[in-house]
Length: 511
Ligand code: SF4
Image: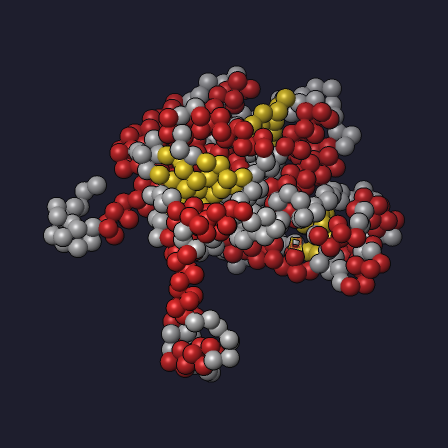
């Protein structure tokens, strides 16, 4: 099995070699596996309506949910702030999972530390881990802020972060005036979008304490929510600048998650300045670009800061129009010609491609705000959403999405499957096939199984490179989404018309 270092092979080719193939065959002898014919028979049965009914009747089991856990969202919020180190109070394995998840998606290092709780801390509480962990993190990594959240373990034993931080400061782990915002992020409720919301609220309430002034600073706060497209943050900043808006992005992790390769490792890069975040309490208004990852934060801003808050998702033509009009209303500035021209180009691109997309049946899954934006865009194209799976759904979202679907003739065939998972989606795709599936990388297995053409949009995207660098927001993002969708449909058409003079009668080149 030893490999020549001059000839290191990827596992995709390595495992095809004879010695591995023999090893796999021999291994089967001891696995006690089932008869392959019986396996094939059951596999066919799982494609039927009979199996679908049983699949949808399951209650105590989730298979491949399209969501992650709370602390993962919390640490994404934290790294949007200047020189901020996420600190997760709980078990080390959880934090290793969060870091690798982000690293696999962004292809960037992601720094987050843990208090490394083990059996003794689970029995006696994790205070000592916190005292030592904060002292080490502060001394070693020299952050300007440490943002704390929890894993399931710390939540199950009921560790109180507020009290632990006070005790740690008393013990001298960090200076008394050093900012240590926190959020309890129990993963047995909610999802990564809840964790993002909890942490954003925790950070803003910590930094803005005592900062309220008599007059506003004339700025607009923009909260992206659990946003994993670097291109979206840059597009939002570009559009806000073109609108002449004086804004604060809460928070901006676009540089942190996209550092240049110039030979120097920067542990902290970019991010919203802590002073700007502290002054966010004095802004004119706050616009969130996602609703369901910012609900507690918006409530807090409206009640505690007395600020007007709203939600605007700049996806597709209508969504981008609404976002720009909201900015225009707040700033008093007209929409500049540059953005009007971009709008015209996006409408032109849609017109060019519309005949290939109109009437196509679509299945999609993902976070509530992502799905809402995509459904809105698909309806603009005349595509017909059919199966909509949102594992981290809630009744408010379902009512909002239903109203959107009801407003369009193309939304009439849609069913919203709240709280369902990707194994449910598999049954849906086999029993009621569609023309296109949209979702994150895990949809690859649905594509392989059901042969449904697949567009990767969402989080995480592990198995394709650089998609997160593009925008899905704004008129330029509209063209990107359109490009991915229409060209996947055309790729499939080419695959289905690949035999000259048989399936390809006209030798089609032009679509
Ligand atoms: S669900 Fe709980 S135990 Fe699992 S990774 Fe998340 S925090 Fe850790």
